[in-house]
Length: 117
Image (cartoon, rainbow, N blue to C red; front, side, top):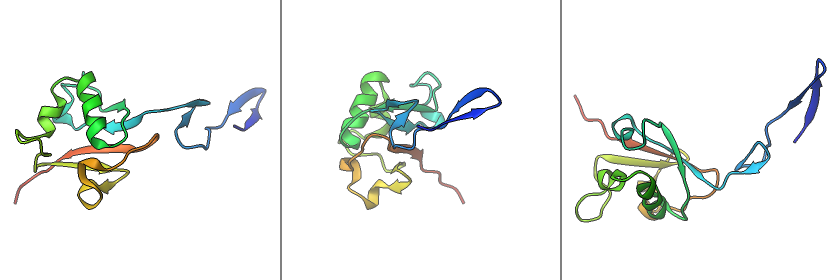
């Protein structure tokens, strides 16, 4: 952390280490929630949870925001076809799917598919 004087004030620059904010380690993964699911998160567009992979992360989110998992998975326990999930802007279909590993500082985006013509 660098400290630089600015007109008699002290300005603290952001910590350059990933997963560290305000000098405190952030042990969570940020998850971007699409508008149709925000009623489950109390209107929050971004929530945080932890997990070793997407499956455990979604389970943790469902513990905090009941009903979220059933909106993402079908009755057979598979991710719904119209739900796209990205980890750090990478589509999980081209990674390890729901078993894609996540770590501190990662950003997960849940994006509903949009059809039209």
